[in-house]
Length: 171
Length: 206
Image (cartoon, rainbow over all chains, first blue to last red; front, side):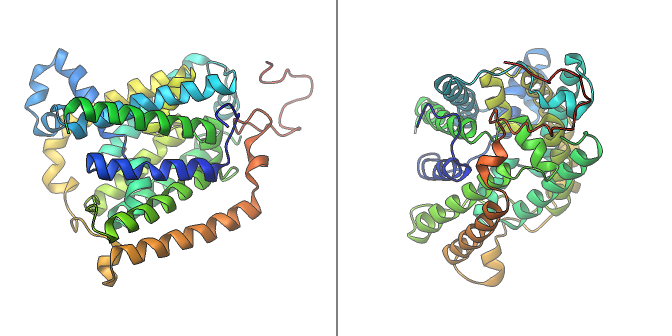
């Protein structure tokens, strides 16, 4: 099972949903990912501009609290877990997904890297404005029936569908 | 809980999270872009299954009083604007903030640029945050959940949500069987036979 190339989306979804148990019981928080970018980004930025830690929002996120660093460890663990799963299944990946040459209409790696940087920037600006991402608002917020999260997730899919239809070529 | 325990807990949970993301293939750009182009529904299947599971889990934990809910405040303008911008980023990245790390973990090099862009975006937002906090980011109804609006206990609403999602997932699977959606290389990359001009070389040969 651990060396399977793919699991059913339902099995994987159940595993991910069950992670709410340790999140709520042990850390007293819901699954989330995007605030870790503020923690790590704020820390890196403080090397260049120490004054950034005077911004209360940054100070809150870089503080040595369990919740802040639990989430940083969580996303680091995601990279490790994905790596282990890939190695166990023996799947070989190219350095860029083959879909991008079709979606972007060019084989250029440089162009893809530039698009990825801009996309990452938009992703986190958006997630921080909305105070959550696909994990925090999506997985956790909707499961908690949070009104704001339902609004945010609807907007997320609306923005994603519009951009994928208008800015990318059909896969 | 000490900081070290929290970090070790996060790492362990993250490994499971990343493992499930990789096995479900939902972290693949082909699956995420395919979802946003409404041609592939694996992302929605994983997402809604995880939401339904989370709702059942929280119905039990909260219903029996073991945990308090942690909903985010409903800040409508910020939820809509932020959600739209986030969605555009997800489509162009072929990833979301969490799956970016899974992509980096399996060796997708562009994910490192998504990650760097994400860190830069978080820092840029941090500089602007104090000036938009009061007049934009925090305007709304506070921590509002649907069952409070209706006046029923959370656990009842959560179980209803899970049941509704189960019906949606059943219908989705009937319409789009997941094995077919994975593609021959389980990355959601399903080039149509006529998509490439005759004589051009295949996009990828392994």
